[in-house]
Length: 224
Image (cartoon, rainbow, N blue to C red):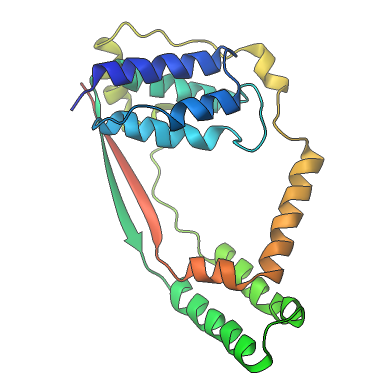
């Protein structure tokens, strides 16, 4: 179904964020409080834009040129009557049984030695195992050569159909965004190191997550 009011409201909200009228915190609050709707396209866009701002640090819009163009296509999607079909599949691999064995070993150590600070040292090898698992298996879907310039649409033809059905005008990438960043490279490195250390010291947590199958989301836009 097409909930035109919800689409227009969400599109206006995104444009406010892109125009620096809303900060990340304001934008996040507005998305959290956004009225419920059965329009899967609205649901998809709300879930998608969440990955493009930091809800822990307030900041104005920070987007690269490809990300800005992607937001423009999301706005086109909302302005059109195209609909989105989202299909999620669960992917099993060798990661789950290996993670389960490592997690069982961690629990066995806890049972044999009891709780204490010593576990932080004992868990380090298992944390290394968890990190290796995350790098050894990264399923990659086949990507169309035009994927970067048409996604979430499937093809240039689908993109053209959406353009033809609306009065949408793509906005140029603002030059002031080129120098913007949420965190400095040094801060990003510090966060990365912090995450690695936490993974090493508290290995059972990432291992528990890795025991579950990976969720692959397939999005298909039905142009209209």
